[in-house]
Amino acid sequence: MAILIKNVRIMQTEAPFEVKENMDVLIDNGIIKKVGAGLNAVADKVIDGTNKTLIPGNVCSHHHYYSGLSRGMLISAGPQTDFIQVLKEWWWRLDRGLDEEACYYSSLICSMDAIKAGTTCAIDHHASPSYIKGSLSTIAKGMEEVGLRGSTCYEITDRNGGLEEVKSGVEENIRFAKEVDEKKKHKKVLVEAMIGGHAPFTIPDEGLAMMSEAMKETGRGMHLHVAEDKYDVVWSHHMYNEDIIDRLDRFGLLTDKTLLVHGLHLSEKEIRTINERDCFFAHNGRSNMNNHVGYCKNLPIIKNLVIGTDGCGGNMFEELKISFFKHKDEGLPFWPAEFVNALNRGNRLIEKSFNDGRKWGRVEEGYTADLALLDYQAPTPLVSANAAGHFVWGMSSNCVNTVIVDGKIILENRAFLGLDENKIYEEARRVAQRVWNTVDKIKP
Image: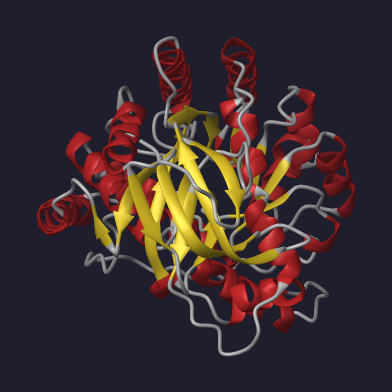
């Protein structure tokens, strides 16, 4: 389906943040074919972009779809005075309460919320210990039915069932990666695979070795929490007499497809190693504040910084605003440009994950048509030099009018095409209540 967007303002979201007025954009077969003024092109669909701003779709570089039904969760819980208690009393009980239906509706809800916020890709990090085998296919199904691009993986851990649980997680990661490879023989896929791990303090050396072999077998990168809390650092020193990053490096887990998450308490030496290995590093400002685990003061020296939410929804406008304000509150040097650039860098992660020669992250000829069309009325001049400032200080998910993923219109005039949104949310509420009832009976 060919789509022509007429008379639109184009704003790039990576440096140098170029802004062009009154442009036309022709999309065909999922690719941006032409960009220019006054294009005379035949299209199946013409969109009037007058007074609208077209940007590359936002990328959530770290999400937890298992949190999709947790909003306002009403359960009894014990003390949560440190991070480990938060995990045991809340999140590790929630993920144990998830079954196939719950994972499916979590995926639908997270994907829909992302699209409505102008997010066209979510990199998921999944856990459902009571439903491991097949869980990644269920997550992918929800993404695909909504039309969101993404990747998913299972967070390997021994926290519930020891080494057998580790093996099950590894097997699910490999199974799903092979499923994706089979699909790719016949068509472009919307959802890719990674090799997931929870955090080093819940993965023994045998597990890291299995993850390394899984990466080699599937050609995928690793997606892993590191040093979210000081506990992870102390555990590594106590149990292995190694820094976390040295331990991961010992197993060959640090590659240019690796995504490390949080990293609040990594040393500058460890950051240098991550940079040398060309790994991606996801910052999750809201989650870090919510869990009271500290602040990543090393952001300015991270090479491949990307932005995630750690399960706090898929709204990257909101995430970027709060992350920026927290950064300034810490007295650190980033301005809007650095944060918007980090957000867009998630597209480099997509390119590494999909690894098929396509390009993402610009409204430009030859790039994949993952786009968000915004109703943004700028009260001051919007030009290349201040575009990042408008993104952080003015734009929001309230501006999102139309979303295109892989050249297909998913959301138009703030309404989903081909989805019964009210019915999905109604069913999600039913499933959520059932899950909450289950979780309330699960002991930490």
